[in-house]
Image (tube, rainbow, N blue to C red):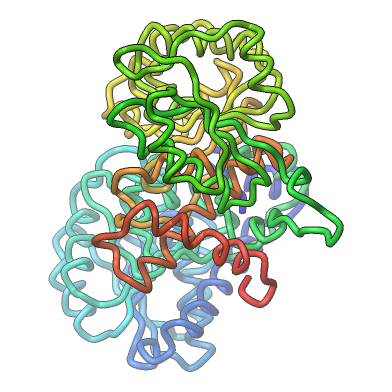
Length: 519
């Protein structure tokens, strides 16, 4: 599902109206019709007890007048509280103000000193439609608009927001001083970026999209490059196995990972790769730790590597590397490997010479941060899987700066360094080397526990080994990871959810996502 910025939406609106001949009033009518339908479908019982549309003076308020008119025609008791004078309305809003008046619809004009009237109107209804402010605001909400929003939030009534909760920044999802807490938001045309990332997700509630007839040609011209992953998109990526296939069909993954005290990371990554469908997995790790790995990974082959007194791998020659990589289809570098001169030399070799798809995770990322200039010259652009702290080290930014603009930080980094990025966290951000971004809606706070990243890294390596493109591997792997986490949390609860739970749930998760019945 395409996701747009406020500026992109405005431009698509403009092109649809001015270039492709769809009247602005037609778009507003379709918007109001779509919102009214959502109200009847989701809030029918509340609507029958009375709907209050709280409208501003712009086109968001105009949409609200259409909603009120549509509901009144359905015999739903509905009135409008206008937080402005009718002389202040935009042209299209004024047109629909008059259309509602002709139906003898009740409109109460509420100025800066009349908020007590709004409070009385709120008390007489069971559902509020927020049509106060749209996507254009960028400054802090003040005055009677801010007071009205606070009053609505304090009412405890369900609120349906028109296009975006009033006061929410459409691009970064942060409240501009104060914002409506909606139970449902009906995005018009396309979801706005701030509605599908945190903290905006919490204000939006259930997100519904209403098709208002934006011209397809306008979308092509504006060319948004951000999408929200959805179930149907992922279902199309689920692999199907042919009856005459064998283990060689599904790829051989090499995992270079592990050191003393960090053996669990390597084990989790390998097990996740197997459960995600890799035909073969080989773990290359320090020789002194081989008994630990061989005992824990009975389905995984091990390649004991020369190590030092600290039980970290020693440098390999070109001959050793070519032997190790023979007949491998994908590589994972980094989980639990430590940060040392050897890991740094190893990463340099891989960046310069590796000719198969690969993933860099955990200590591999911390090692990479020491020599970032080498990344854009990698023979094969890798998939990087940083959490915000690792992304901060890679970019030289603070954690706060990374989290403040996760989408653009990931996109710009991937473009600049010619790589692919999974920036982990609530609503993980996937960015490709071509500048496309995908936002993942699955996952839950129960997944904030050790080893989850190692599992994801192993999953991604397995998908690359099976022939997925980096983009498809990231989309499917990240969505699946969160989907299984949500399934486990629904069964067992979020607290105490561990990485091994995800691994064990992967086969059933893949089956569920591949089923048309469950899409």
